[in-house]
Length: 450
Figure 1 (cartoon, helix red, strand yellow):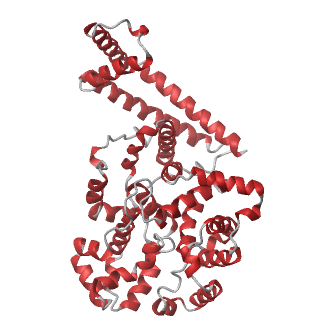
Figure 2: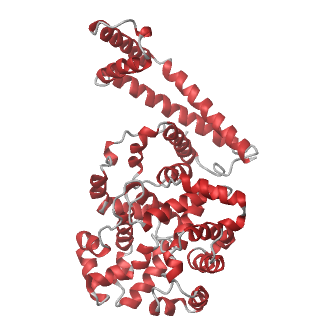
Figure 3: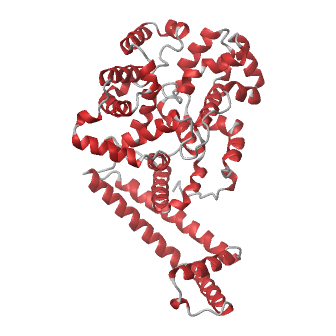
């Protein structure tokens, strides 16, 4: 059924693109551009003393067309065609959104569009289209930097993670072992891994305890390849579980007296976002994404770039953006800048998993996959800035630790986005050579209120 629905959705998207392409091709602006392009190619052939266009090799034809396109892209006819294309896309998206919203009342409605309003439907359509284009044109992957500090839809997020977390050889090895025997994919410490996974899920996302088998299978296989640092040094997983039980009985006292009681097994925390994003029925893909992630983090490199993951300290970022808050925290924590970094050390080590709520955590990971894991400290600093008023009311380290544990999870993606945009994104975009939001063409769907 799932494959059938996917095939229907793919066919519908292709039909949408075909209709849109026909409308653009029929516009007078496109016909004018096509005529100019034809004339420019003919002029180049004559000027270079070449044969007719049909007698040239495909590579030679492409060179001529690219040259003509580059020449025309600076002219008024090209700009008029581009604007006409935007208008056609605007109208087509608007009409397609209306059509899909109307069909929601007719069974079967897809889970992705159920209850969506018109703008949500348009965003989903655009996200699906962008995903398809990027999968077909790998040389356009630098365009992903347009997504920096954007709240991604599930299709775009999955596409991004598939591009950035790749380990095809590790996936093939897992599939071969799984075909041989399930036992071949398990760690010798499978029981210890299970207890760690249970403890982490109870702490970070207790509502997802049904994911334990999937999570344990993924982490256990990784541990079978190379003992995971956190599990090896985590010691008594049963003791960690007992500490968790105590924390549920006395959460405030536990937060104040043992702020780092669960800093063991960060690798288990890292598995949770992967489980959220990767389709649940694809075990091999889950393993591939997870192994790619821990390999890069263990090596101290940013996925896909090889850059160091050691970013600016949270204390330094705060000092640059909010000196008053920075001074208050250093004084109330009674340890200076190092105390500020220490109180968020678990959040940094776990890459915000269990510290922020799930959507905010996925948003933080999107930023890091696009720009480097070192920028997790920018997300944490942005969270502290969002909690500024409450932190000023904290008089000591115990109060601050308890406040962060309770309130960091309440931050929304929109709050983090605003804080990042105001304080950190200009410098970050410059570092990774990402375009500014002002540079992007705006597409405002017409007549959304009709």
